[in-house]
Amino acid sequence: MITKIMNWFDDRLPITATLERHLTKYPAPINMNIWYLAGVLLVVVLVIQLLSGIWLLMNYEATAEGAFASIQYIMRDVEYGYIIRYMHTTGASAFFALIYLHMFRGMMYGSYQKPRELLWVVGWLTYLLLCMLGFTGYVLPWGQMSFWAAQVIMSLFGSIPYFGEDLLTWIRGDYLISGITLNRLFALHVVLLPLALIVVIFVHILALHEVGSNNPDGVDVKKFKDKDGVPLDTKPFFPYDVMHDLYAIGVFLIFFCTIMFFYPDGGGYVIEYVNYEPADNLKTPDHIIPAWYYTPYYAMLRAITFPLFGLSAKFLGFVVMAAGIAIFVALPWLDRSSVKSIKYKGIYSKVFLVLFVISFFVLGYLGSVAPSPIRTAVAQFFTATYFAYFLLMPIYSKYERCKPVPDRVQLS
Amino acid sequence: MQPKPPPNPGRRKFLIGATSVVGAVGVAGAAIPFIGSWNPSAKAEAAGAPAIADISKLAPGEMMIVEWRGVPIYIVKHSEESLNQIDKNLERLADPDSATEQQPDYAKNKYRSRKKEISVLTAVCTHLACAPKFYPQLGTTDFDSNWQGGFFCPCHGSKFDLAGRVYSGVPAPDNLPVPPHYYKTDGLLVIGEDGETA
Image 1 (cartoon, rainbow over the protein chains, first blue to last red):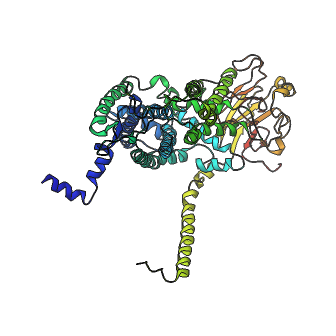
Image 2: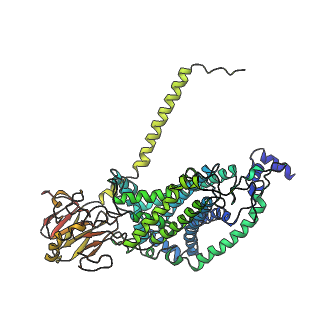
Image 3: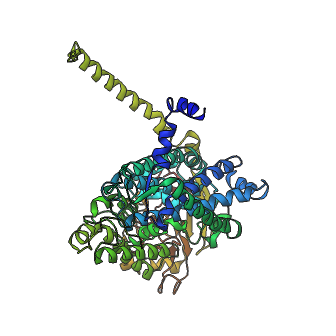
């Protein structure tokens, strides 16, 4: 009877085939490690953000006059409103923390290499959309930091030679950041960008399930199959991976809830204290610091203090900052190594990857503190090493001596 | 069996071409309202009207702030002492002669103003549009060991002198802009229009 009902549906909608392809028969490498959890946790955070976002929307008012007050209303008068909001702010930070881990995993194990170039490019698109979502969402509470962050980031477009100023006015819809600007960022944040994000994440997972998951050894698990054509070094995603993922999700949510309930400000990093003041377009806060997940790029922006080739320092800073985010997309074509995983790559790849991580953290710190001549010099140095990881990769990845890669995955 | 080639290939080609052209025109036409609606509305344009400031009570060394088009305009009345500084610090400035077009022609002089004792400056840092802070005092400050008085941007550390001229080696590329302005009477400053004498 059940089979008959299932057949009726399967003839009209590929339910069983889809479940098999993406869950019960999706071959996951057996040597996946803890780094492979970030992806599934990102999906969990996406759900958290969608739900909490929709609930915030029920009480938020997107006007320059009412936005700040409506946030206070949510925090004080709406039942459980403060939890819904802290869920959303904590979720935003978690989103970025996880996507950085997820990207780093890909960089470590060469998950961007052939045949996963498009998977990596689509993943990079989700990161880009996330950056836009983070920025547009940050403006909505209309606090001091919201306003001035919008001012700083939007005025970057004004630095583009020739048509920058007109472009800036067009983006703002006004001669200053105003309620008009707030309204359009609101529309982007709650409709266009999340819609695009969901589509892009869907495509990302489709691409993943087409080429298959990489693994810490970077070996092709599809090379050795049993008599049924199932790759030997894999197990079905459901139930095996789903089960341990559920455990990991539990642990993750304990951390998440600890921050959400007990440290919702995250020491001023998750929610910046200056944002507890309403936006005032005549008073710049003493220090304009972006949310922590943008600080490495903010440090790059500030590091460029000199004009070059007839272009202003401001425009160059914008270009370098944008390049810092954009350059990830080129990784599949910068890496000329014959091996994927850092486990078997040569010493230079290891050194440069470590250097990249150090640069990222140092820039992240420098972007979160006030500038000084010494800090600017340090930021310039680490901006250079950050880009060196990418730009020198075609050379060092090609000429270094790699270790032999085994045929099958290695279980320690 | 080979499928028969479609009849009238010329007509098909024409129809495909014509449909594509009409489609492209349609897309371009449809984009106009979507892109155009991001331009400033009539309400936003009306809010950009000139601002008027009463500067008759401004004492030397003091600064007042008025709002024009949503940005702060600094009006500084200089003391004799600070006016004398104007030629002293030139080697540290990126553009001491105001060569870049950051001011109306009538303010293209070393004081960057219509009246030498009064500076009218758009307090929007030319780096990333923060409002620089006014530090009139001379000597050592947190950010400069030999400060000559002027404006310091707290966001990214750009420095400007009292006439709004940018220091070299800071993120800001240009001098602070001087907005269009004129004196209606001695004590009445209009910001946002050049006036008839311009």
